Image (cartoon, rainbow, N blue to C red):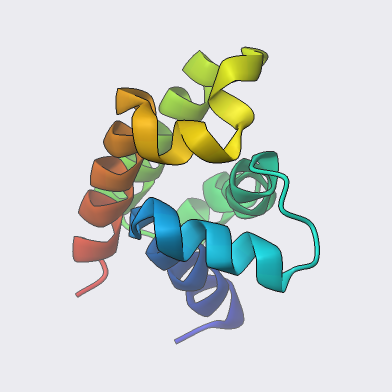
Length: 108
């Protein structure tokens, strides 16, 4: 498996995890800013079109990543989604977890 896929899987696992696990991850980074979760994904998503082009991602994997990215686009710029409490309280974060889980299943 490529370094890109390994990195993507790591990020997807965090995004699919519970709010508690996500907060532990952020605290481990020394920066408990919730937007770091989206930034980690975005860094990898930006490379996804080229990975699709060279066959490192399937079209279904890419589509699922696009769906997840669209969810982040929907909550982008809305401050209430980027707090520690929002991770466990907002349905949008639950939807992000579900979409990340769907993405992960595509790699099995």
